[in-house]
Amino acid sequence: DTGVSQNPRHKITKRGQNVTFRCDPISEHNRLYWYRQTLGQGPEFLTYFQNEAQLEKSRLLSDRFSAERPKGSFSTLEIQRTEQGDSAMYLCASSSRGANEKLFFGSGTQLSVL
Amino acid sequence: AQSVAQPEDQVNVAEGNPLTVKCTYSVSGNPYLFWYVQYPNRGLQFLLKYITGDNLVKGSYGFEAEFNKSQTSFHLKKPSALVSDSALYFCAVRDMDKAAGNKLTFGGGTRVLVKP
Image (cartoon, rainbow over all chains, first blue to last red; front, side, top):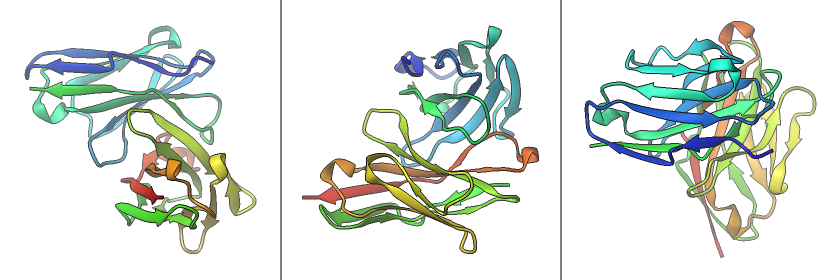
């Protein structure tokens, strides 16, 4: 069990640029989640995959955000035309089996939009 | 809709004293409840969960939490706090009702500071 891995750890970009983050979940986990956390706040749900299917997406999520999980393994989160308000820590988590299972979180990708 | 409230932004406690971090929740159905801890520059780590059964749940590092359905609360407790317990603590809830989806909703967090 090597844990959930996220890359890059930090990303600094200029407003209007596109960015992409990667998450490698624990290998046997079929469920994958993306969350966003801003300073002093709890993680906010963005989207959820079961295997390769994106089953849930937050209604608060802008159309500039898109996520994929090809082949049900790693996942990518892309933000197009970044805005300063997108600056946050982006967290990935994975779990196995049912909805009562605990989530294993990665260390996150800190995005700063200048 | 499901939600979590952590009424205290920060809790200060002396080492060796009991620690309590408060959490209340709201769900349409019955809840799955979780506590996570976040240390500086590290990801969230699972502490404990309540699914069903005994209302008192024991978890990692000597922590426990008590589920109280009538008060819709799930307070985190530790009988004797350590300086190393200083961290950010998050309560989270998921509605058992499948129609509510699979997302875990987190509270705003409570910073715990244990002083020597």
